Length: 196
Ligand SMILES: Nc1nc2c(ncn2[C@@H]2O[C@H](COP(=O)(O)OP(=O)(O)OP(=O)(O)O)[C@@H](O)[C@H]2O)c(=O)[nH]1
Ligand SMILES: [Mg+2]
Image 1 (spheres, rainbow, N blue to C red):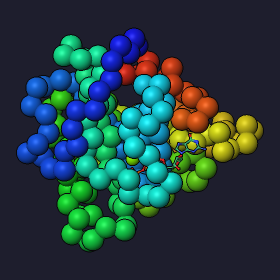
Image 2: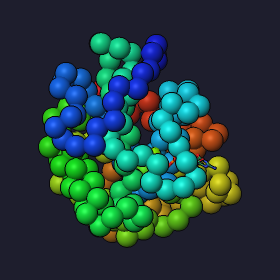
Image 3: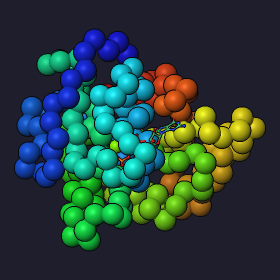
Image 4: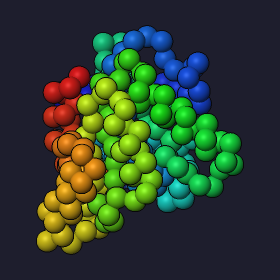
């Protein structure tokens, strides 16, 4: 994928303000702090275009980044799924927006579901797996922060997650990534090219 330009377009806190220009969209979903914004930055080779933070809850709306201008497509950075430190009402609203987005958004071509490579999928990961099961859009699981995992653990972790998914009857590709070390970026772009 040749990336000529990337620009931040808008931060959309609700359905009504999603872009209306019908460009293809690629979404990054996952629980708060899993590394969605960092991965997006690593993919486009920019340090901090998508704002990241060691404190969960940094991304608080659907953030749209336009790649390659008017003939291009959007990368969409989603708010952390199930982020606990906002009000119950706010959390429910985001959850509903994310749920509606992944099931109804016609422009959506791929959903990357990010899961921390260091741990077994959590309850929140499972909740998102269930929501995504209702989506017609192809999805790929990206295991994040693999640089924090000893080398000999990395393959084992991929296999464990695949087994976990098989256990709940979900069959999707699993890719090991690190935004820090840029691991897996070519493979992620390959999925984008295949499904766009
Ligand atoms: N070692 C390592 N740390 C990472 C990696 N990716 C992200 N992090 C760190 O994890 C923390 C969270 O990263 P973000 O990219 O802000 O996570 P997010 O999923 O966008 O979080 P929210 O916006 O709160 O939902 C930051 O401190 C990052 O530096 C990685 O590949 N390796
Ligand atoms: Mg973020």
